[in-house]
Length: 264
Image (cartoon, rainbow, N blue to C red; front, side):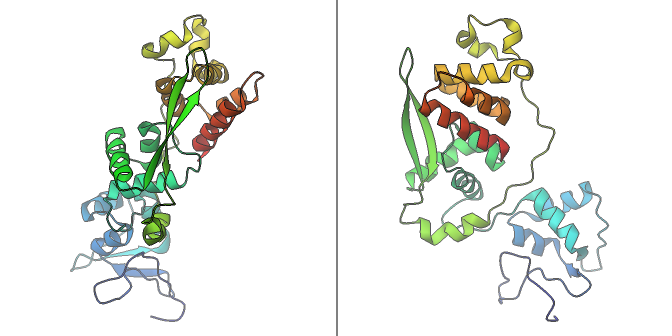
């Protein structure tokens, strides 16, 4: 390769060779296996993405495809990048990476799942495993109100003795780009109706009264309600709630944390 080539991949082959490089023409013949290894996924998933994105990728007689740098970058963003993190499964690496980018923690497994690009069940299982391994902590934060409630916040434990040995790989994890067409609930679900018992029906519509709903969830401190709000309210809603009068500093910090998570 010439001096102008550069390494895109995160791993190397068994003999130390670079898996993905680009020459002066910004193209390189590579196999789906090499690309899958570089971004930490499976060969069928790479091939399905190439087909779904309708990339102009031609296979040669040995099954290798020629892709431009832009095409590989598109595949990386579409599929995400998950290098091997010693001692962790792929899902655990995705969840730990998501938590490491949330300095204030996350309020539920559903929020962690959304940020990591996995299912809530998988995220919950990963959080339990990471906690058992000392890489995640669960903080209990009281939410004062008519009835004091404990809110559980999951955070990456960067003080863990294991952290220095995996921090580099965790920092390289990138989830797949999220769709801009996110589906949100159009009304507060029936299971949370008790939190809005004295609220007019029009004020239970997040599109019309998102700020009001966010404030009500903050003041009640209901964990299930906050978890639902984290998925269905916007950053603007949480910032509105944080700016209203009578909100305690603790609740304001939580609202701003949720606003930051929503923006990211």
